[in-house]
Length: 394
Ligand SMILES: Cc1ncc(COP(=O)(O)O)c(C=O)c1O
Image 1 (cartoon, helix red, strand yellow):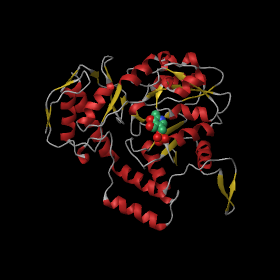
Image 2 (cartoon, protein in one colour):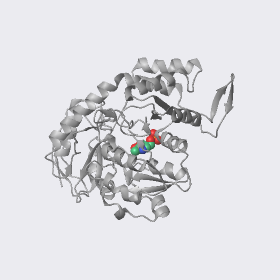
Image 3 (cartoon, helix red, strand yellow):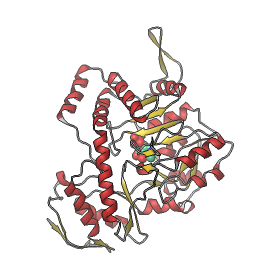
Image 4 (tube, protein in one colour):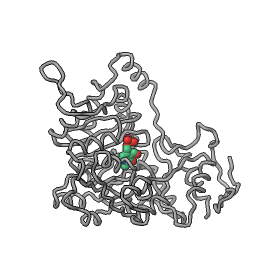
C-alpha cells in the first residue's frame, strides 16, 4: 500500500509511505491499545457465569492476593473502576467539606472530580513539562492547615518525583493518595509506583496496561484502611455471628467474578506485556528522536514507566487536529493525552481559573498527542507508525 496524497485543508505535507498491510481495513487499524483474550480465558469466563457465583467471590480474592504480591503491599481492595478507587480512598480518610486536596493541573478529570464529590476543595498545582506530573516544587506554597491529602498522578505511567514528594508530605504530615491509574507496573527506584503513599489507586480500564473491562484497585499497607475500604466498597457490610451487619454507610463498588477472571489472565501475561511495551518505547525513542515537529517523552534515571501511553509533545505551531486526522486516514489511532482542569467548564466555574493560570498543563493539553503502544502491535505496525510520522513535514 502507498499513501502520498496531501492532507486537504491542512498545512501538513505527507510523503509516500509503503506499508505491508492494508491499514484501511478495520482489523488492521493500529489502536491506541487493544487487549485480547484466548479461547481458554473466554471459556473460564463462561464457567464463572454458569456457576451463578457472579459478584466478588474467590476469583476476586485470588486476584487481590496476586496484586498484593506483585505490588509488594499487604492490602489490595478491588473495586469497580479507578474512579471508585480514588473516591473510596478519600472517604476512607474522612476527607470532606472544609478540607483541601492538592491535585495536578493536568490529569484525567476523575482525579479532581472525586475531591469535589466528597465536598472538599481541589487545590490545583501546575505540572512540569519534563515528566507531565505535578511540579513538586510548586506544592509547598499551596499547603495550608486545611490540606488533608496530596494526590499526585503518575501521568501516562511515568512516576512523579516520589523522593521529593514523599519528603514534602512527611514534612507537613500530609497523607499521599497516589493516583496510579495509568502506572500499573511502573517503578521508582526499584519500588512499584502506587505503593509509596498511604494508598495507591489503579485503574483496570481497557486503556491501561492490564484490564478487567472496567475495574480498579486501592492498595495500602494499613490494615485499618484496608478494612475500611472493604466495608466501604460493599454497603458498609461486615459478617457478625453468621449474619451481616451494616457498620457504616457504604457504596456498591464491587468487582464481578468474571471481570476478575480477565484480570487473572492479564496478570499471567503481564511480564510479556511490559517487555513489549518497553521494547516498542525504545524503538520509538530511537527512531523518532530526530523528528522536528514533536518531542518524545523524557527518561529519568530512577524511573521506569510502563508507557500506558506513548505521549509526544507537538511544537506550538503544529495543528494537532490535522495530525490526528492524517493518522486516522492512514489507519493509526491517536488522541489528545490528558486534560488541563483549568480548561474545563466545571473547574473554571467553581474556582474562577483559566488555562493560562497553569501554563505547562495548558501546553500539554493543547499540544500533547498519544500514539499507539502495546503488545497488540507487531513489528510491521511499529515500523509503519514510525515511517508515517517521519513522512510528515509541517
Ligand atoms: C489519571 C487518572 N485517574 C483516574 C482515572 C479513572 O479511572 P477509571 O476510568 O478506571 O475510572 C483515569 C482514567 O483514565 C486516569 O487516567
